Amino acid sequence: MQSERFTALLRSRELKSTPQRLAMLEILERYGHADIEEIYNEIKEIFISISLATVYKNINTMLEAGLIQEIKIPNGKSKFEIVKEHHSHFFCTQCNRIYDIPHPQRLPLLLPDGFVPKESMVMVTGVCATCHTGA
Amino acid sequence: MQSERFTALLRSRELKSTPQRLAMLEILERYGHADIEEIYNEIKEIFISISLATVYKNINTMLEAGLIQEIKIPNGKSKFEIVKEHHSHFFCTQCNRIYDIPHPQRLPLLLPDGFVPKESMVMVTGVCATCHTGA
DNA sequence: TGGAGAAAGAAAGTAGTTTTCAATTATAGC
DNA sequence: GCTATAATTGAAAACTACTTTCTTTCTCCA
Image 1: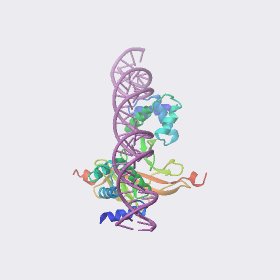
Image 2: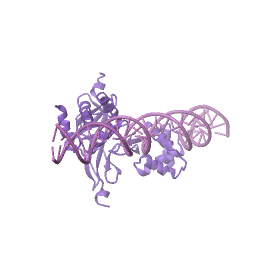
Image 3: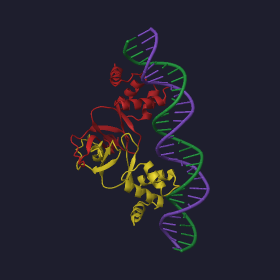
């Protein structure tokens, strides 16, 4: 079953596997990228009395565990995604959707002497194919 | 005088040149990158009774006018900077400072068919020279 | 330099997020 | 499977960041 995977994922980071967390991960996987509001609205369909505080707490717990990551959106609310291979993001300013795009093989970065890079993030804004072809 | 420049800058975007806005621009220039709190604390030294609402309103006004821009910080508060030539950012996770770095000449991006890029942002995290050499 | 319109300041209001605490639940060990 | 323990949940209150409203003051063009 699907949730076995997420249970294993949670346990691998010493987090308890609760139905609420499993549902959140399932939603994140289905959406690809979702913000707090989207997650809360979706999960309420299953757990009618879930608290928004639980959603926030689990987001923070899973962020700290490195299970999910935050994507800061230009002039918008943060979205979250399950951590996977390193990639870049395309943000469509028309439909507000986020798309994963391959991360450039080599970012030709010119860092000043002594600067030690750890991670690089690329965010491209523009218009996606669906919006552009006027669908 | 210094403020003449900022007055011209504000007027070029049809914004009135007020002492508060001039001070904010001066602070932004001096800091390079500053968050709301830093701006507010600095400007209070000059305008003891300035309202935080004024700072927010001016930030938003100048953002909309394209005079300044927001930099979203991984796990941190947004910083603001005066708009200048396109560049990338380096965020030192040790001292929390932002550094401007040259934007890669050519970002080797692989966008799906039909996607039209408009802007690209690169954020590099790591440790800056000052922190790395243990200064 | 007078007046229209914009901006400032103060205070109240809103949104988003975190904390607290009692009750419940997951899981490791038996 | 059952139990103990520690973590998680939900509800409410609290907190922080930001915006709105309203009145007063300021900018700047005629």
